Amino acid sequence: MIKTKGYAAQTPTTDLAPWNFERREVGPHDVQLKILFCGVCHSDLHQIKNDWFDGIFPMVPGHEIVGKVVKVGGHVKKFKVDDLAAVGCMVDSCQVCVNCKAGLEQYCLEGNTQTYNSEDRSGVPTYGGYSDTIVVREEFVLRVPSSLPLAATAPLLCAGITTYSPLRHWKVGKGHKLAVLGLGGLGHMGVKFGVAFGAEVTVLSTSPSKEKPAKALGAHHFVVTTDKAQVKAARGSFDFILDTVSAEHDMDLYLSLLKTDGTIMCVGAPPDPYSIRPFSLIGARKSIGGSGIGGIPETQQMLDFCAKHNIVSDIEIIGIKDITKAYERMLKGDVRYRFVIDMATL
Ligand SMILES: [Zn+2]
Ligand SMILES: [Zn+2]
Image 1 (cartoon, rainbow, N blue to C red):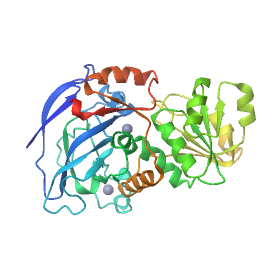
Image 2: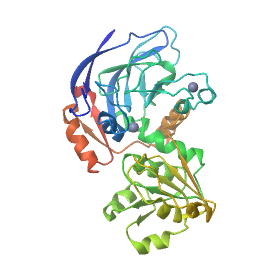
Image 3: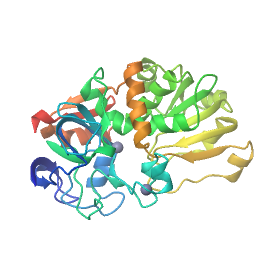
């Protein structure tokens, strides 16, 4: 077994603290990474607090991982020692179902194996990227183009692919008016990708103070959703809304901003069911769809696209000792736009 240092929550009510554990030996199809940076995702906090379901403790969060390959198994073909590599939200899937065969491992019919707070195919708990090393089967390791700045690449593995995938699926691009709802870790990536794909991008936000940062990210327009006149002027104007909000919000209001045949793409996960008046949909053939991360082939495509178009996340680098303070700031929305842990501080 491989001795591993990490930061773990021992229970849902304790803060993260140093914890030593073991990872499996590198098998014939495995790649071992020395973790250099790990992004801090909102879902890390939800999971260590048991907000969604009863988690597996001790829990080592982290699913925005970039690092360097330090060992490969005998059958590994795509990676060699010293390569830059990344791991995102999942580390395995059945590999044989119709979705896995189509490169949609995130929708594996048997359920994918999450990078942490999950059990691997043999029933052993998985531990995430707030640690010094990780062992992952080759199929779930991504290549990191050398031109990408490493720390700012980490959030692409969750926040990046979560917004890239729906924009690609619904073929958002030139000639489309795209609104991005919420300007956090996900929303700021949605703006960057929307602009890169050629759409006319508007940020929708309750807070007027976000206008300047939204435009700095490349957004063309800004609508304050608490301003009645601005909302009225925006009615019926968008082809798509990328909805990144994970708190309760008024879907009827946002549906009213869509054109006929418009679609809301949901990537946020509010704890309670959406409330929607049927006429908000029926009235103009509107749709609401959802999307979760992306498959491995598409995640690689996204990283390559980012390298070509100089897209990374806007980040603030922290030491691992500051993780609890970072969570507190994240809850207040006080981060532009993602914290990334420098694992050299572990
Ligand atoms: Zn995430
Ligand atoms: Zn499958």
